[in-house]
Length: 233
Ligand code: ADP
Ligand code: ADP
Image (cartoon, rainbow, N blue to C red; front, side):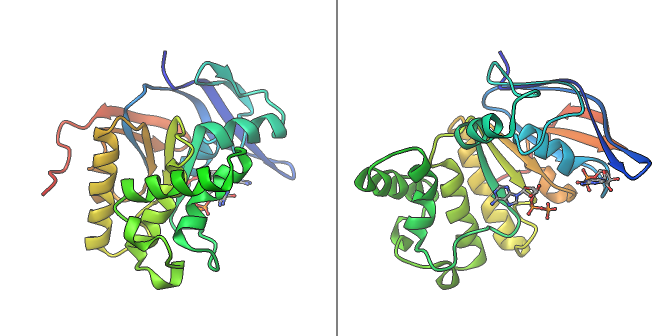
């Protein structure tokens, strides 16, 4: 069974008397281990779809099954619970705690998962190692480069072994060389079996994904395997 299965999901925002159809009958299925880019111009519905897939929001109509669970009609509390266990988020602006070390930032999600301090530190260190930053564990965000900060954010996203890594414009705040390094890391995570969904409006970045879904006006315009995955090194 797929990790992600949406069936005819729509999202309607009501603004006074106006209705905005942000998503119109979107059906998409993503298997474990896929690396997918959601592309599309501004206003095409990427954020809305990402928010639903990431359990930050629910569709107005239609069904969303995440790992066999129907999350489309869950309460906010149930949704938060599923989100914390199943989804690892990476954002354009990293969203790290400025006063906490890299290790403490990465360990943070494990507090809610109920691990002891030593278990948290061990797992956080392991996750930092997996992104090549175990030698920066004591550094605070402002003592790290942009690319290193994003690596810390990726280590934090992965520390709970989520079903899906959901990255919203992960290279949006990085220069092209650093973006390339982050895309190399994503390729390595893909090779290790992680399921990755990346939201981007940049063609150059989408080219790294192995499947590209293009949205337009709230609908899937195309959904195709990328046979021309951008070469690495
Ligand atoms: P994208 O991420 O591709 O730029 P969005 O999903 O943010 O697209 O937006 C899709 C459409 O829904 C746009 O017309 C946008 O203005 C509208 N929209 C998004 N969020 C809201 C909201 N909270 N309230 C009202 N309209 C919204
Ligand atoms: P944008 O793509 O519009 O710049 P973000 O990437 O910051 O916005 O966030 C995308 C979505 O994720 C938004 O709905 C936002 O509310 C939510 N979000 C942002 N940061 C966090 C966070 N640390 N934890 C949970 N949800 C977040």
